[in-house]
Image: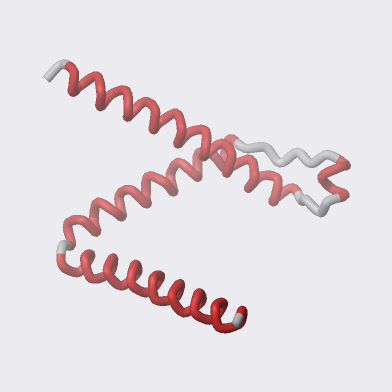
Length: 105
């Protein structure tokens, strides 16, 4: 019985993923203007990641080295953390700007 439940879960997950990807592709084909906006957003995220990667350090302590963390892994972890912080700050700024601009309309 447990095997059947797992296989059913896998099948339903696959159907959900295929549906989500399929409808996204279908919508992008129907409205190419939204695809351009999506590509701009992806480009902005890649630019933010580039800034975060440039700012991150690659220091590795002996404790981390014992766990198998290399300099490149440390740099990617640092870039991910900096990207998270940048996204958080930019999101808060966008939220505040949106609310303040609505208040004056």
